[in-house]
Length: 271
Image 1 (spheres, helix red, strand yellow):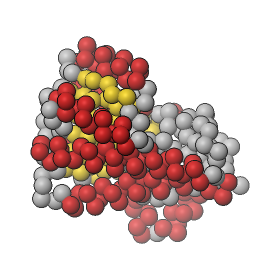
Image 2 (cartoon, one colour):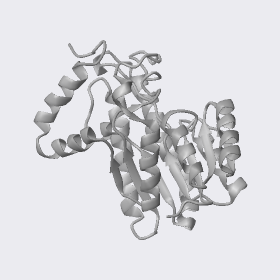
Image 3 (cartoon, helix red, strand yellow):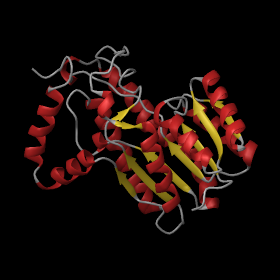
Image 4 (spheres, one colour):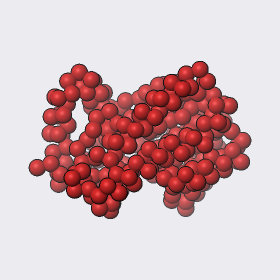
């Protein structure tokens, strides 16, 4: 799929991977609909991309955990551009706390954004994407292949996204719609700064070594290439590929490796 003059919706576009995706797609001549809660920031990003790359970009305030917001995002896209070629379900939040210590509402909040946000946006966009034989992207995670200690809600939401997209892919096997599940490894972004603690409060500081991770720009390039090439799944980083492999063949060993890795975090939850 050549992306010039395509219409792409990106949720969670105000920072991190979403913002990098907006820039990467703009470079490729795409017209953009940027959705996020931070409306002022979105407007600034849209304006800058229009000026720099000569594309058209609109900002739509959207909390993907609210179904009506997702419906409005899709309706605004169709009102402005008349079609949808690609939907990138990127909006997401994380959490960091042991399940035994965590209020159940924290898991619900994570699921509402990561899973239900993907479901809502996809539900309202699918009829238009069927017409263009376009693409639905879910930005998942390696945590959707292997449960991570201290991230029960996050892992559950990403496993759910993977299952949803996998079933949707089979349903659309003969419709021409392309489903891409993109799973970055640990990526340098603000998702850990905004991760929820056991009480649902943002933790504020990353517990991992951000400087050693993939950049959001690198992730965005891989995903954009995946859309162009109509790739089925993307598992990024050597660590991610190894995790998926070990989970299939030596899951007990992987449990120990994951435990030992997470135990080395700053202020580790594992004692």
